[in-house]
Image (cartoon, rainbow, N blue to C red):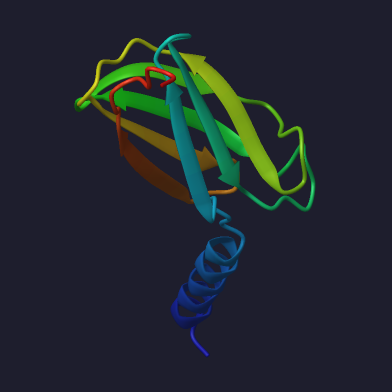
Length: 120
């Protein structure tokens, strides 16, 4: 086999192997507490090692405008990622959260802020 063919096969194998290790979150649940001004983010993100495979970055958008970028250096649980983000949003606003895994891959989820309940 020529050197070029060996090189091409090696690169393709390396790319395929790295793509197999990407582990984006499998689901994201968002809830917003308007009284507290807090967005609760909970994502299913299985991790084989909390310091190697974790949600490393969260971008938060309100109505298409990025309002927050948060970096993480490990995940606290082997199956889920959670965080609470202080955020000001009004009924009708669209909140989007984009999560990125340390090993590659990403997932986004949106929600529309509802009217606060009156407790009646």
